[in-house]
Length: 227
Ligand SMILES: Cc1cc2nc3c(=O)[nH]c(=O)nc-3n(C[C@H](O)[C@H](O)[C@H](O)COP(=O)(O)O)c2cc1C
Image (cartoon, rainbow, N blue to C red):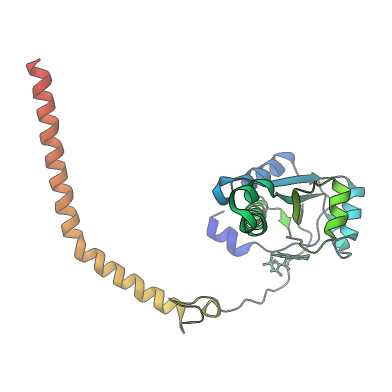
């Protein structure tokens, strides 16, 4: 699937078929997670893979009783290890970067799952202390999200989408433009005009470079011949 299609068609899935997920698909999702950007390349995201029905049941109950999670054959608890970011970047690293790193990993996971025809959902509502105790998460780590994964057994509900113009500002916060697509179209036109104008200069520059390179090459060949 094209990256853009994958992004546009991914949805949260909250009901799964009773069909196990192939291990190579789980591995692909985890590998995608570890490829996410992280501040200073700390790669401080950690993943607990859970297939134990009992554990999944206990966790679902402590995700504010979101029992739909128990339909998933597998869940992945995404944690952040806080130590490196704290040491390198202080409070900002500990509180912000660790969460952002994990969020980038989570989005990679959701998209990869979707690309492999799996469903998933980002679950952020859970009892953190309970999950820490249950899974032995140490004090220097923090669970960020719980990701149930499985083959979809539902069509996601219609999604209400805000217009892009409500979210995009130009040059200063709040400075909206009325029609984003129109503006980007105009911007494209300007860029093509500019490229057309600079094209001859670029071409003649390339020709010059080619001639110089040929001259240098001939010189080097002559030197070798003389030897
Ligand atoms: C930080 C965060 C926490 C979320 N927590 C939950 C959750 O606890 N339960 C749930 O069903 N969905 C949760 N979601 C999923 C959102 O409800 C969902 O992404 C949103 O409604 C948009 O729908 P879509 O994912 O289908 O595009 C969470 C999403 C994010 C980013």
